[in-house]
Figure 1 (cartoon, rainbow, N blue to C red):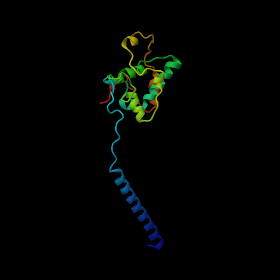
Figure 2 (cartoon, rainbow, N blue to C red; figure 1 turned 135 degrees about the vertical axis):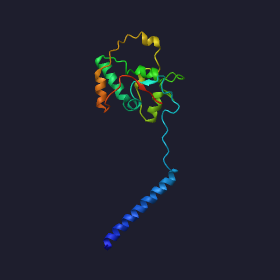
Figure 3 (cartoon, helix red, strand yellow; figure 1 turned 90 degrees about the vertical axis):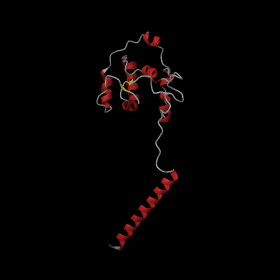
Length: 170
């Protein structure tokens, strides 16, 4: 081995030892292994239904796309579908103690606070469940499930959105 190769090898060994010492110090400074991140839904009422409109993993990732798509169908095209109505979400997920999805332990508010995301849905929409009488006497005529929702879901790399509700959070 030449003198140059020994010098390069020595530099690499020194760098590796320095990195290992840094990582050991960082590990000791932080108190050991990483602790699990607490769930934003700890202590939060998850919902009164046993089923959700889509698998939980899909709803966690794509709920905003569903709501925005439903909004576009309703506002721009006048098509109202039952499945992704915001009022249905609120009716199911409102905490029975507070009668709201907002507040410290509210279903929507807790996750959005955790994710540092501001929600403005409830500047116009009620965060409280509708009374059954209001829902039953509503003048809104609901159209059958619109095929564009399924098309939008397929674009999000979800192969199929089940037509029947699936098991909710456990």
